[in-house]
Image (cartoon, rainbow, N blue to C red; front, top):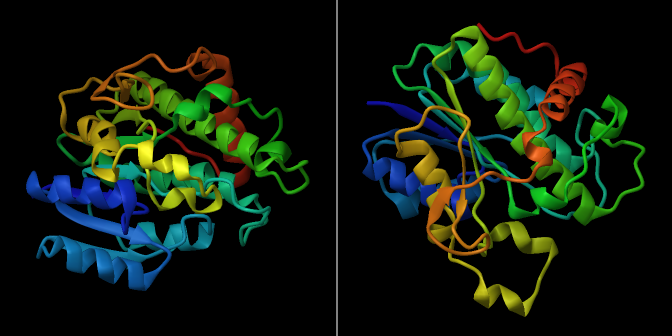
Length: 274
C-alpha cells in the first residue's frame, strides 16, 4: 500500500485530498499544528489507514523531527499554508508566511528525498495559488527570510505562492537532470473557501468553490499519469475542472527558479539530488 504525507491535512484542501487518497488505496499521514483539529479530521475520515502527526511546518526543528518519523513515503503533498496573517516570525526568525508556505516544505522535501526515491512512482506536489501571478521574486536570502521587510501581507502571500511554483519547476529540472524518478508537480485550487481565509473575511466567499472542488487540482496531480513539471489549475482560473496550465511567465523563468533554490539553501541547508 503506497503512503501519502499531506501537510496541513486537518481541514480544507488537505482534508479533502486525504479523503480522495484513502479511497484510492493509500495509507495517509496528515500533519497540522492543532492536535484537536487532527483528531477531528480523524473522526471525519474514519479510516484505519489514516494516521496523524502534530507538526508546525514553519518550525524547521519540527520539520526535521517529522521527517525522522516517516519510515517510507511515495507521495508528498506540500499543502500547509498561511495567507495574510499579521507580521510574525517563525521560531528560526523567518517571516511566517514564507516559513510556512515555502521554507518548511523545501526542507521537508529535502529530508524525505532519499525515502521518496525508493518508491516506484514518487511524487512531490506543490500548492501554489492563482495569486502567484502577482508574485515578485525575492532578490536576496535576507529578503526571502523576511525578518526586516516592509510587510505587505497580501503581496507577501503572492510572493510565497510564486516561490512554491518556482520550487516545483526547479525541483523538476534538477530531478530530471540527475536521472531521479521523483516527479515534481504544481497545483493550485483557484478560489476555494477554506480555513485559509481566516485573515480575509468577506461575504464574497459564498461564490467560492467548496474545499472538495478546490482540491481537484492537487488530486489530479497526485493520481493522474504525469511526467513531472506539470501545473494543474481550474479551467476558468478561479473555478472549474482542473486542467494543465502554463502558470505565469515568471513562474517559468529558469533563472528565477535557480536563484530561489540557491537562496533557500542559504536558509535551510544544501539540497543535493541524486
